[in-house]
Amino acid sequence: MIKNVHERRLPGDGWVDRAVELWPERWPKLVLDRPLGVGADGGHGFVRYRCTGHEPGKRVEFTFSPGLGLVGTHVFEAVPGGIRHTITGRPNGWMLLGWPLAVRWLHDALIEDMFDNLSIAAGQSIVPARWSWWVRVLRAVARRLD
Image 1 (cartoon, one colour):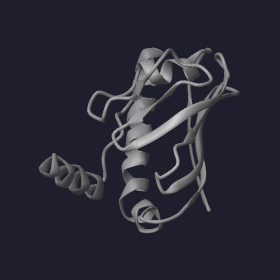
Image 2 (cartoon, rainbow, N blue to C red):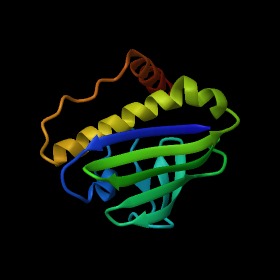
Image 3 (tube, one colour):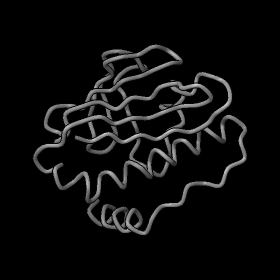
């Protein structure tokens, strides 16, 4: 079972819905087939999902598409004083090795980059997240495969 949680302190509200808008440019673009809301299909890179829950400004839930190798959800939610992103799921197939070896590390870096964008939009002064050496290696390999 995977439970991966990231939180960031942010002033004010509405950051949950802005997460799509402020997606980091240096990652595969997040694309949805319609505005954010229940039923919107999309994803980023090879990760596909559908919006299965949306309380504007408070919570958005995406359920991973069948065949990804991860049965579960990822959720953005407003928490007192900030935002939380949680992946909860059960890996299968290639993701049994893919998650611990690569996907987790890439996911963690992407979420921290997105939270940096949210912090900047909130007017906070931040020290940007730094990618680990492993994330830099994985990104270099991915670029060569494109």
